[in-house]
Structure formats: structure tokens, C-alpha cells
Amino acid sequence: MDKVKIALQYIMPKHLVSRLVGKLAAAEMGSVTTAAIKWFIKQYKIDMSEAAQPAPEAYPTFNQFFTRALKPGIRPICEDKDYIIHPVDGAVSQLGPIEDGRIFQAKGHDYSSLALLGDQADDAKRFEEGDFATIYLAPKDYHRIHMPIKGTLSKMTYVPGELFSVNPLTAQNVPGLFARNERVVAIFETEIGPMAMVLVGATIVASIETVWAGTVTPPTGKDVFTWDYPTEGPEALTLEKGAEMGRFKLGSTVVMLFAKDALDEFADGVEPRSVTRMGQAFAKIED
Image (cartoon, one colour):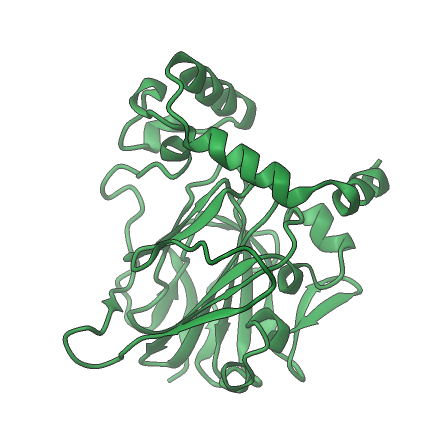
């Protein structure tokens, strides 16, 4: 059955299906929308007591429900300056060193950091011999993405690609998954050097948003688009540790890249398949 699931992903019109689902998720359909939200809550056992608006009827569209805010203070931010924090609720897929420009995906699979970053060679060089962490967001998770550390935005790259599912089964069976799917790469300058936040699209992910650009939707095609941003002066965008930096409309994966010697060690309990909660300690900064 697993082989059938993977085979179907290769042949299904993933972009068409994803865009159609996206339109439905953005539509205000009254009782139909509310019924869909109630079904989703029951199906994925979502704890709505954590939501700022716990009532399904409070959301005019499915997207607004899916990107719902949490109650203030329910995800306290680790204040220890020696630690960066988890950027999302989810589960660690993989983490570790970037070796010879390769990132470990699953047993028998790895991919290049250069490909992940949209073949931007200068960007890839900044993360040579650094570290990575890949976090998977399941449908039940909170889907806003936050800053692991204070940073100033320097560049954003949109990379077109496939829209395979990014669940653990697909990660174990589709070579180079995260460097094949559509994605948005945001690079920040931080006190520990450059940090890349790679927001990876997936099947039925309607869109990816950032707080500075809104929904990132360049023209359809195979071209890579880049935007450079000032890191000094009144137009520089600096986001504090724990600040929201983006959102997924219908879930996906975040891949974080750090420079060589930026991180000392991952926090206790942070390992593949461990649950992550936004704001908790993720990794210790190198002294």
C-alpha cells in the first residue's frame, strides 16, 4: 500500500489539485465551511482550547481556521540568551551537520544544500559545514512560523517545484524531496551568522505567506525569483526572537540552516521524531 501511495503522487496533477483546494479553502461558504472545520477538528483531534478563537463558527474561511492564532502566552518563549527556540509546533524529521554540502533526509536519501537554496551558490557557501534541522508540521499542528533567534532579513528566494506530500512516508521514499518541492527561502542575518528559513510547500498547500511580502506567488513557471533587502537603515526588517515570520496554508515542512560553529548542541530531547513546541529551547548557541 505504501508503494501505491508513493506511485500515485508521481502521477497525480499535484499543482492543479493543490490550487483547487486552495480556492475552496479561501472561500467563505458559511455552514459548509463550518462543517468542514468541525470535521477536520474531529478527524485530526485538534485541541481548540489552545486557540484564541476556539469556536469553529468564528472562522469565515478554512484558511483562517488553519492559520489560527493561539491564546496569548500559551507558547512561552525561552528567554535564555544561550538558546535558539523551536520555530513551529511539529516534529523533528532530521537534524545534524551539513556534510560536503549534503543534507540528510532519511535512510538512503540526502540532497544538496545548493539545490535546496535554489542553486544560489553564494548562499550555499555561507552554510558550508554548518548545521540543519528539518521540522514536519502535521495537519493538527499550529501553522504559524516564528523566529528561532532575532534576525534581520537580507534575502528571499522563491523556488518553483513539485508539490509532493512531505509526510514521513514520502520523506523516506522520494529522493531529494525538500529540494524538489516548491519553496520559499528566507535568509536572515543574526548574532550567530546567517540563518536560512526554508518554507517547503506540499500537496494541497494552498500558499506560503511571509509577514513582509504576504502570499508569495510569483508568475507560474520554472524561473527562480530573488529579492534582496537592506540590513541597515529605516527600511531594514528585523524580527525579534519568537516573532511570527510566516504561515503555511495547509501545512508542510520547515528546513533551517545555520553557519559553521553557530550551534554548540541541540537541547535535551531534541532528536528525530521528537515533538516540537514553538518557543521551547531548540539548540544552544556556540560560545
